[in-house]
Image (tube, rainbow, N blue to C red; front, side, top):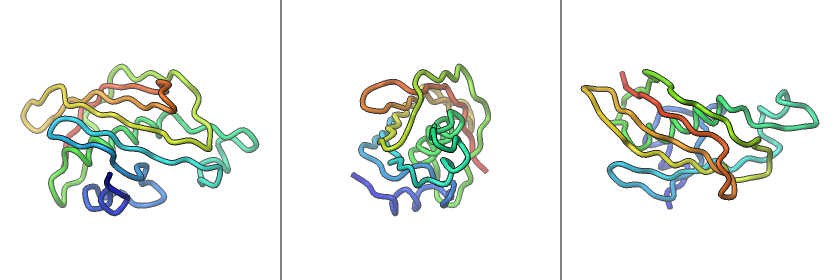
Length: 135
């Protein structure tokens, strides 16, 4: 298990936009990571007061950040090159652990194609195919 300091050593994101807290598994082509959500997260003050819902776009960003942890070379900035087939299946509400799984499915020049999913307690919450690159 890798902690938040490991995450910060691999990607340039920082709070409040660091959306990955740790890594539970990493290989050359796959990674599993997580974000622990509590009602104290700043996003829930406005989304939605009294009924906190974690935004789907932040789940996609969490998948992308997880891909960055797997793929980025030091000092590189990750970039979206495309988002395909994004689907949101379940509402995510705190408190919970949002778990990300990312697998590399292709590579062409400096663009990597990944499949990513987000789960809470084994329930599929979001999935997408992303094209990622870097500066």
